[in-house]
Each structure stands twice: as C-alpha cells, then as structure tokens.
Length: 222
Image 1: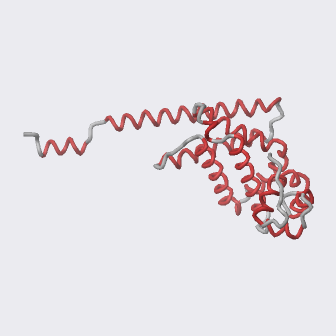
Image 2: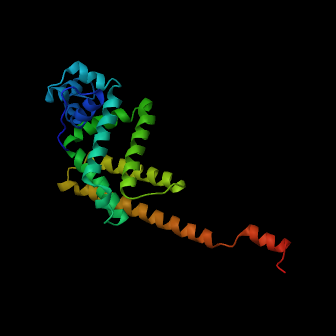
Image 3: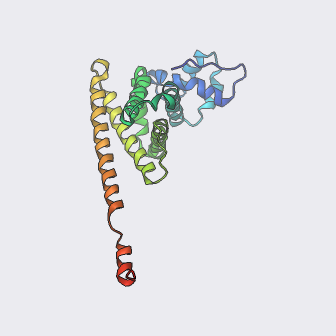
C-alpha cells in the first residue's frame, strides 16, 4: 500500500485513514483490539489514547476501516480508465486479484478478521462491508445498471469474492495459483449465468404480447 502520513494536528478521520492499512499486521499478533491500535499508533509517534478514540467502535470498526483502505488502494492501482481497455471478465478478475495482492502480507490478520465478521451479531455489518466492496468493483469495471441487475451483480460478485477469499486464506501454492484457478472457474460460472440471463431476456422481448393479442381479438383492425 502507499505509505500514509499524518499532518501536525490530525483529525480523527485522518488518524483512521493513516492507521487503517497497518491494523491487520498488528492484529495478526495482538488481535483486533486496542493493543493493535496502539502498536499502529506507535509507528506514527501518535498518542495511543488519541488513536483509541479513532476506533472507539471496537473490532468491527477497525476491520471495516482496514477493508476500506483495501478498497481505496485497489482503486488507486486500478483506476477506471485503466480497466476500460480490458474485457469485462478480465476487469473483474484483475480487481479481485489486486485486492488479494494487497491483503496478502496480512493473511493472519485477515483470518482473525473473518472469524469476528462471522459472529451472528456482526453479520449485518459484514454484509454491508461486502456490498460496499462489490459496488466499488463494479463501478470501476464500468457498470451503470440501475435496474434489478444492479443488485444481482453486486450480490453475485460479493459471493464470488467471499468464496475466493476463503480459498486464498489457506492457499500455500506458488503465487497463489490454486486461488487464481478457483477464481477463474467461478468467473466462468458467472459469465455463463449472465449469458443465459441475456438470452432469456432477449426471448422475452421477442415474444408476442399477450395483451396486444387479446386486444386484437376484441378490437380487430379495420
């Protein structure tokens, strides 16, 4: 990730933004708690009590902010103008692989984060975080859908990313080849599904209108 800096008199938002990319590295050893915040704050010579105020929402607040920093770094590495030169499946593949590349140094912190996110009381916020990341990826990929497809695309991508992440966290293969192959298969499935949907939509559009047919029976053309 890009190296964050802090101004002389930072706001809490600036502190969160600076510390977020470092939280998982410390959470790998300390857990997602105040100790990890203090360790990250020490890297910036920041008062631990002030840093704690920036994450007063606890572990989920820390995790949410860390994932937000991955979203931001992914967007920095893959701006929309760079992605538009690729085919849609290549855009999605590149976005997910880039996210995993960013998170790769902090897999243990990610594992601990996943355990916390899976707790029943945290599932609503976990779903919201996943939706946000999927929405950012689709927007970067050039999606402009505003109908029902807007929601199905994001739900599908969130599921693809979640399942790929589960493989990634336990992947010991060279260059994460097992994860890359798994992702390629999942995206193949999604592309086939989208193709079937498009064909079904075309058939519906080309079907005779039942209401027009009935209307002609009642009011024949003269």
